[in-house]
Image (cartoon, rainbow, N blue to C red; front, side, top):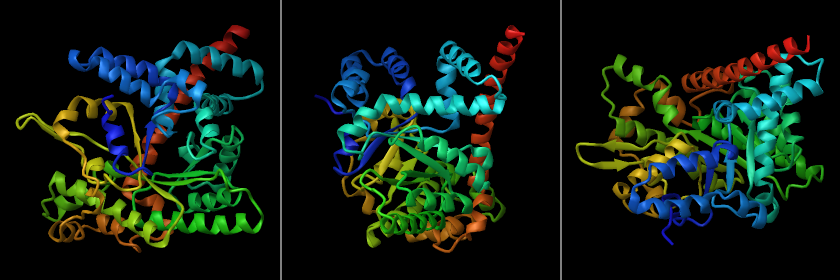
Length: 406
């Protein structure tokens, strides 16, 4: 057996986890596409590897898969719908027929819940076989309302009602952390998203700790409860204010230093978790593969320099494809890599930028500033756009269905 590159990463720490960052509904179609472009010498090997990561038959029969969990977000849910539009048009028509008094927004939300439910059902056997340790899927509250606590509470109630292996995905706003505390107190698993900074991670840990204290006081069953805190790594350095702040100040920051800065932030949070023994787990997402054609070399520091740590790595289809194509250029993993740190010179350079200081320092942001942080605004806007696109898809089916019924 030839281990997949992500299986090799997992071998650096038996507690680390590889997750699939998309709906399970699209996995087989994606895998078929990867194999169609596989080098002839690797096609058989890749086919075996991809089956080990996720094979619907094996999951339903034995309750095991290489991925230990699944994350989704509005753009990924939209991709799942667009990957099989005929199926979803039919599904939407049925939902409309079952809820004739519902408007477009209400139908959309039921459609989104159905995408989460469909994915949750597919990996439910993993949840059961592991006793609730693995086999979760993240369902996200509507990203258009990241500071509306009552709306997020309502969304969370719908998501958690789907089943015990649904992990409610909550934004890293002040209001989001209040919701995480409330959900934790009920024994509901959570995934903190649109989160980029150490102050957010500390706020999440505090919310979880407070929620757990209430849960234990009230005798809530926590045997199948989990908390993950997402670090949206490449988004921190590339969709926020770091680049323009550096340019305005005449500070030359290399691409390598940006990545090291992103890693410095998650490592700082990770080290704090280890120090205080917090039950939350840091989740790495928004990773990138860099390929230098001239040097015929490649790297993915977002995993290479975290290897050996007890992290969750959630990997989207496009990222896994690139890792597979460049595996021979990436080299072996170093199980002690997570212990490394950014150089003092590079850190001091980055700390001259207010945006990075806000992300790195424990008191860099106040809670009410979380939703105004550059990367938060950009990412929440992107998620909201994907939501509006999905609503538009639903609206077209809705209008056509109503017209036919008229």
